[in-house]
Image (cartoon, rainbow, N blue to C red; front, top):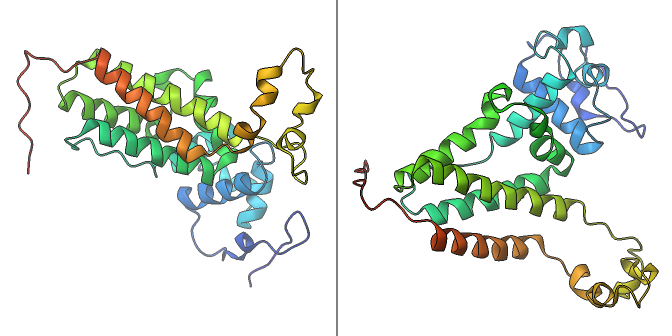
Amino acid sequence: MNRTRAGPAGTPDPQHNRPRNIPLTRVAMLTAALEIIDRDSVARLSMRRLGQALDRDPMVLYRLAENKAALLDGVAELVLAQLTVDPADADWRHQLRSIARDFRKLAVAHPNTVPLLVTRPLATPLSRRPLGTLRPLEHILELLTRADFSSTDALQIYRALFGFLHGHILNEVQELVEHPEEIDDLLRLGLYRLPIAEFPLLRGLASDLAGYDGAIELEHGMDILLTGLTTTLSTSPTRPRKRRRS
């Protein structure tokens, strides 16, 4: 008999309708963890709460993730597994723009996972990170070396791309409106608190700040980035181009 538990607000949580006689898989566990993070936050995720969501003894979960850190790494892998990278794309500029769009869509769809995608990896050596989080890097390096960039230049392009993407995502998902009920942009953003004599330019940008469009800003940023990369880096003129498979 399946049991239905109430969620935080007292409403039934559909996660709890999973029959116990179905073997628990790592993907099912990570999916349930992602649902908790999406609904609440990373801080609200715990093995105990995840066990309740899956109707399992929390100790069973340690067979699939040795601790919460491993669980969070798995959630990051689950999200990044949805990032599409085609290393065989003959147009590397088009592919980088496509990757940027997909990465932004994932971050907007799962804003509470942004710390796992952006800041958490900084605390982990590259070689110790989950393999799933490194596959986009490997595929992008393959894409760029296929386009006859040197390995060093390919790594530089990757760093430039994700340096921009991480900054863009942090700006977009953390953009807060202080008084959404206000009509005047200066009041909505709370910029009226800034002394006009010290911050005349910032106060004057109230409408621009309020009209922020993440998708449009991403395209503008990619235009600048790709133009800069095309101007400063070039493919090797001495190495023969690799024949592509049909």
